[in-house]
Image (cartoon, rainbow, N blue to C red; front, side, top):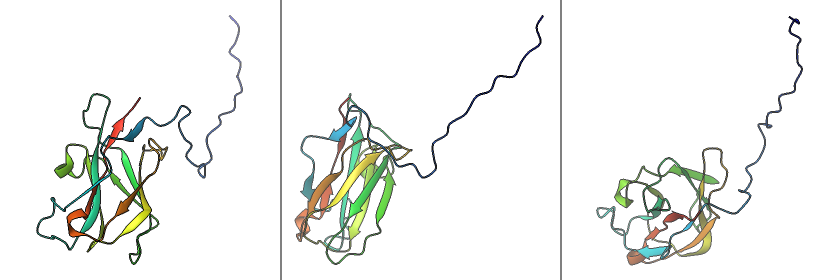
Length: 153
């Protein structure tokens, strides 16, 4: 028998500073029909008009819950100092369903016009949806913005 010989190879690993890229054929998730919608704060009735937020859920092609995905919140609201980027997971705010998420935006309603956005990403920060820009309102009957995501492919 012939003795074994060493085979050389190069292992290429991504740079730790690599940025996320979009999926090649578009996003697998989009906004569910009817989203975004502004309603009264129904999940924190004890806070009434002393709360403003955004929340929703993420479902798959058959309407089942998708948990463990990251929801990113970014942008700005006049008069509110939000961190540059805030993240949450689907499945942690069960008021919205088994795949619910929620962000508190302020301690009172504030009007803004498409200055805030949410986006669904995977555990590697690869976008699974486009950034969804939404309005907020200076109105206690519209201090909760519901944005639901649905798998589209």
